[in-house]
Image (cartoon, rainbow, N blue to C red; front, top):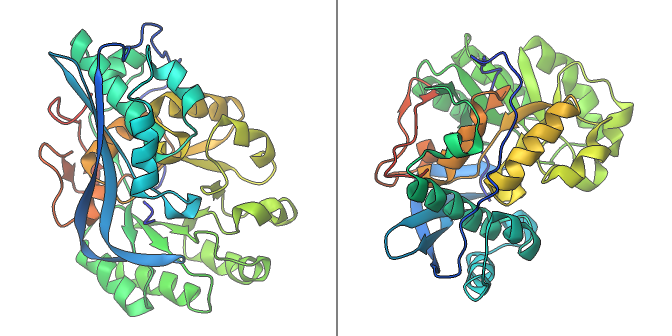
Length: 353
């Protein structure tokens, strides 16, 4: 999870063939509305780029006289998005006739606005058809999936306390900062949670020298994934570095068009619906990534369960799952996803899909 997972064993052994229905809903006689919502966090959340104390999300409703579909997007400052800019994009869709998921991909760029509208269209279609979204997409879904829990960037002692306070959760993802304290942070969390699986996320903060100086020790600490060590515009250095631990593209991977340049740099990609611009493109990215032999992490921003529910569809067959956004909130929305002992249950119909 990001502010601005360990192989979750899949119960399915067959190849998934994603199916995006051809008969999408149309907005010809529908009403679309967006609004900003603020959700306070339990504790301040910090990554290498900054910190926050609340989650800002934008929700969309698409309604006819009988059903209403809902979706949520998180404006990402890293990509120059704000609540106002996202709402402006959403409002621009209100006057478009015959809008469906396919047409939406051409009208809005990948990002939070398209994500919210796309997911609302999927939700509306599910309610109209009286089917769940995974039935519409023709994909299997596990009753429960294991997720990592993110530990915010801080001093080694505070990060260790956070891991200890989280109890016996099976997987932690540690936010690191690219400074001399990174190894001490990992060592402290490892001591506090000796049996947990550990992932790390640098959020573009490392230099090649930092990578070389820490990689061997990280391997000894049992780190199983390194997420986005270098800035997205400088990640070509990964082609010349050893990868004793798999490296995952987050800021470097948004949609299927990014995959060709990632092939010799990363072993894993992080699929977030706020980057893909919705479930429709996320399904395509998942399939294309598998065809190109990438492993998959399904991630999220700091958000409510309304953002997690669509991503939950992709989690059953992912190699890692990092869908802990609602766990960082002081309170989730009504009918939120159930989280028990590091596992996520199924989304309720009242929530989404």
